[in-house]
Image: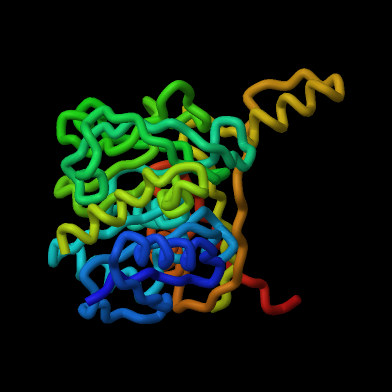
Length: 218
Length: 86
């Protein structure tokens, strides 16, 4: 059994995620957007990129593809799903996590290393960190400002806030939130790129733990 | 019947609009002092349907499913019958 990596036209972090899953000791397979049956997979990663050119809104068109029905079916089976960057925007668009990631407060493409606070370690992806631990993972997005209509205190109480920017808030997200999960904690949408922090030579290997944690529970 | 459809998509009142504030700052650089700048997106297309109500219902569905995200957007639908005589 393997972790499936979904490919849309315009995905561009798929190979990096594949490599990171291998480094974490797992097996990965690519899944094309028109595949609806995902029953062969133990977990799913929706990687970053610019699916369908980010036309309309980031993630809007990808959210209406057949593979999303497969993702929803896996979520019902309580399999872990991680959306990274464009993948996070897609999870927000389909409503599997609360809130959305929209145009940055200052609308420029923001590509830099950031310090993140692990706000909860109850998710498979963050279980190998201590709560409130600071980790280093890069961001790269123009539409990553977390916005939610839901009360932020309720999301905090339910431990649905997974990661928050530390030191500075580079995109104007509510309370610096940059990763959010559903009530179960098994579906997580994160704007930072853990796969780009999966080896020391890249600047940090903190990101590898997200994949190791995911593999631990499957 | 053939209809011309126009959907105007705008951010909900009170939401930060970085595109509009950038335009406003840029206009100020040119010496134009403006305020309350807003941007919106217009999507137009033609569609065939039995009547206007049925077309409107479908377009509303399109807005809910794809053209807008109801969490952040308001939308306005305008439907006009295509004048076939011209």
